[in-house]
Amino acid sequence: MAGTRYSERGDHIETVDPVTVSRYRGITRLNHWVTAISLIVLALSGLAFFTPSLYFLTGLFGGGQTTRWLHPIIGVVLFFSFLLLFLQMWRLNLPRREDRVWVANIGEVIKDQEEKLPELGKYNAGQKFVFWAMTILIVVLIVSGIMIWQQYFPDLVTIPTRRIATLVHSLAAVGIILVFILHVFAAIWTRGTLRAMTRGSVTGGWAWKHHRKWLREVAGRQNEGPAE
Amino acid sequence: MSDTAPQPTTAAANPPVQALEGNLGPAAVVRSSAGGPVSTEPAQMTKVAKLIDISKCIGCKACQSACVEWNDTHPEVGVNTGSYQNPHDLTPEMFTLMRFEEWVNPDTNDLEWLIRKDGCMHCEDPGCLKACPAPGAIVQYSNGIVDFIHENCIGCGYCVTGCPFDIPRISKVDHKSYKCTLCSDRVAVGQGPACAKACPTQAIVFGTKDDMIQHANGRIEDLKSRGYDNAGLYDPSGVGGTHVMYVLPHADKPSIYSNLPENPSISPVVEGWKGVTKTAGVAAMGVAAAGAVLMSLFTRGNRVAEHDEEAAERLVETDLKHDGRGES
Ligand code: SF4
Ligand code: SF4
Image (cartoon, rainbow over the protein chains, first blue to last red):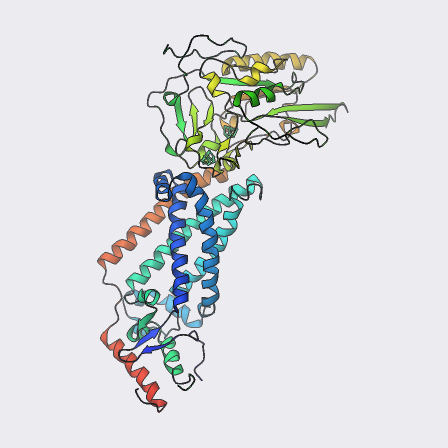
């Protein structure tokens, strides 16, 4: 009966007293952290090329030549790692009607008055924004990045195109770093969120407060599983 | 012994014979990529220039050979594709290249064989230097020469992106960028560039920039008297002038000379990338990061309350009971 409109099939009630709900499988969490570490390495190495005041960051990777070599390779790793995450998450990140109400009342969220807002599925509009912004920016970054990948694609595009690609790459990089900051901040500010990506589960209260439709669906499903 | 070398004023000048200190060291650096070190009190040298008179060039490639020999590069043995141009493009091992172009003059219907010695123009405002992210990988000396300092180069290719003349080439072997140095290592000890010295017709001459302009004017007058009404000097102002200049018989159409740019300047895209994008981007990221840290430290954060946990428990239990299996 209870379907998978607001939850993934694997999401389930882990313990009843107290209630904890499984939100991400181990493999998804691993996938997330590979992506996260790649993004951090890319940001640090990319910033070194972006502004001379941060060129010293190349020291973290063993000098300028190594950083120049490493950055695009990690970029490819991130692309495929994120692609796997995307395939697991895109469906429940599709926009829904309640997202608009949530965005219109973002002030209530900040004031911790979520009771006044519609019940939500697995993701709120903020999380969906982060998801789609990351998706778009990663595509822009991989495409423009390959165009300026001197070591393997020196003659892929003309020099005027390469100039545009470089500019687009740096703008998208600034954008993704801003989205990254927002993502980390929101995960820390909303207490109880981080454990979803470390232990894989959240408390029932967290689910009730932030993602009630998701919780209802997951709780409703616990009865339907194969008996025993 | 430690006397510094005089500045060369002609390519033909014989080199000094006594041992001398080079004068193009760190003390002469006036600009350096990515905020690399510049000399606080740079030795003010006279601006130099190389002048290439296209009307006098016979395409013998003595300059190309001299370049290979002096710089000890090892270009690959090429293949003939129906042109004297060999190799077919600049490479990390070939800093200068004679470009051959067959052009029919629409006014006279004559076939003109245009031969242009391509290579770094040593821009007064170098796009390569502006684009380079590695401190001190590209420098400009007070005499105008733009030099790549290979130990600082990281091989990113940004100089290729920044150069309006498509000059730098990145080596596949050591991943460093190469181009004509204007023989900075010869000029530093009072000698002219190897190419100028080798040129049998003196189509390539070298000296102070003022002298070279004066010399060019004489050549242009001569060309005009012989029917080349549009003869002129190529010293493009869009890059602040160059320290390698051409005398062009058809200066009104530089592009007929194997796509010599009409009005070269650093691309606005490159300026935008290195200018406002960098400044505004760093500011935006800094403000966002600082804001996030401050908010995390000084606001309470969004916490789950006890009644939320209880509500969740009730919900889960109701669903279990509903199924008749009870709490197990
Ligand atoms: S021609 Fe290109 S490589 Fe040479 S100084 Fe100008 S910008 Fe730099
Ligand atoms: S490849 Fe060019 S832009 Fe990159 S570090 Fe070397 S000289 Fe600078």
